[in-house]
Amino acid sequence: MIEEKNEKIDKYFYTVYFIWGIWSQINNSVNVRIPFQSAISSIANVFMIVSMFFCLLFLLIESNFRVPIDKVICLVLFVFLILILTKNQSPLTFLATFSLIIVAGNFNFNNILKTYLHFTGLLLLLVISLYYLGKIPPAMIAGLNLRMRTSLGFSYYTYASQLLFYFTLAYGVYKNRTITYWEIALLELANLFVFYSTNTRNPFTLSTFFIICIFINKLVKDKFFSLELKPLKYIFMFIFPICFVSLVIITFYISANKFEEYNTLLSGRLWLNRLGIERWGIHVLGQKIAFNTFSNGVVSNNYDFIDSSYFQMLLVNGWLFFGIILILFTQVCREAIKQKNIFLSIALCLIAIHSMFDPQLLMPWYSPFCLLLGNTFAIRKLGNNL
Picture 1 (cartoon, one colour):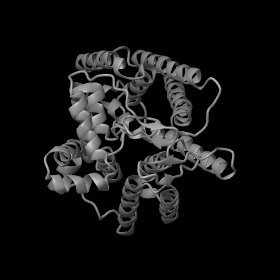
Picture 2 (tube, rainbow, N blue to C red):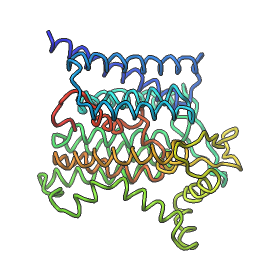
Picture 3 (tube, rainbow, N blue to C red):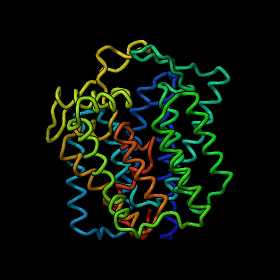
């Protein structure tokens, strides 16, 4: 009887994530306008918040409300901080996102990945197919240099490659050592297709590196990487703080010539990081910022959007929240190493690098890996939930 109830809660959680995840992808990344889209988004977010509340309630009942006091205190303080920070962004989306993250640690991560792979794979196939059938118009984006870039039916040219990057990581981690050479080849072909269609370098380079790691590791029968090497172990464990510090150094503490060189290579992202810090400053609890982005498909002359997940989080949510997130990600990396999960360790490392220059770190409709942060607040004892 108890096992049946547990199974129902699990199925409900994965179903809610599927529905909310695919809708969030459509709403935030596909180049279509749907009647009452804003209202549907609000309903979807409220649905997620209410669903996660009831999931948490059932989990508490399941555990007979026997939860360690330190875990309760951490959860209450974190929820309180999230409620305060809703003032800085779209409140319903922010609350829905962190309701999901907080509760997700109670559910099997492999099943979370499976759910994510289903809705993301479905969306990528449908949108790109409908684009080539002429059912979804292209979003032609012109940069300041007037170079035109197409988007394969998504509302911005990088969105397909960002989704495919996280899909590639999720697929590799989910299949782990059972992945076949055919699957490896298909993943790389998909990434090549999207790269040549959209000309997005960062996600393609990182995806290809991950695929090469999987291929070599399979070729030499799991002897390519060893998490027993102390230097490698500490790099993987502290990769998120390392990437943030590295980004701060190349943004503020290198010579002008080197800065210009790197800034050009990174499409002006370093200059935007610096501009953002100088203009808005860093506060304990962040601030509400209205970024200037595009006007009629052309980059605005006042464009100031900060792509870096780290700097955007610092500015919008403040250094207290940012510090907590870094600690939680470091804990996740530590657990991945402890459980000798090589593919997950590499994936987290690549996500940390990707987040230096792209903003999807805490968006569960893009990345299922942020749901691992919920392990800290988990009520259930799942054992190796990585």
